[in-house]
Length: 252
Image (cartoon, rainbow, N blue to C red; front, side, top):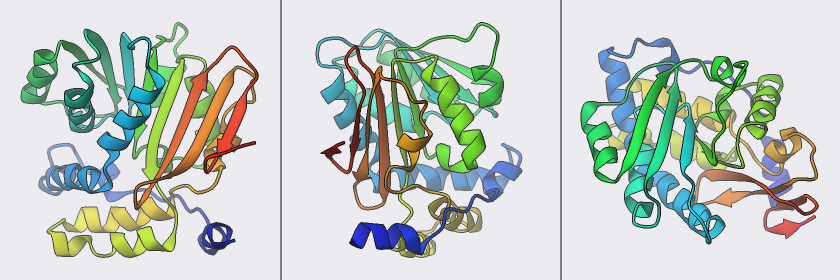
């Protein structure tokens, strides 16, 4: 009952974030991207993703990874440093509207035998190409919450047709997360980050909202659950058997 009440207390609302409006080289944008690195660390998203992936890829490792809305690539680099001893070599495609991957970050990937290619392109433009590239694994971190339901449904449909495994970590849309977002100023985060954090929570997810938008297909196993203190995790894994849908750890 508590979870249902929290979901109903906050209706999902998607608004444009300031960081999306600023040029890549803007001083406030640069500062906000640094803040995002800290926020990702506090939310533990690299750790959450590593735990999910190690459990899923037990008998093989993915050879190709795509990250949608990859930003500067530092979240994936943190994940790579944890998982690289098990996975290599790996080809990585970072899809983002802005080219933010630094030469230093790229070099750190290469030191792990991960070959990284940044692709400056809108995610829908990339997913809807006439000959889309397929991947063993597709990731999205703090990205899906930017989209309204119709666009999100379309994004997930295209993603399901180009990957065998999809993993997303997003803000959990509950009052506790909103209260935490209001405290970011005390950690030194700038005005862009403080503004966008509240918008991100209100646009986040709860319950089985992402599972409901994934294309109906018996060839997928879906897991959707709370993760950590502030996060919402969604996993879609292609399988041979009948589709399972797992909500908050319960097989439906």
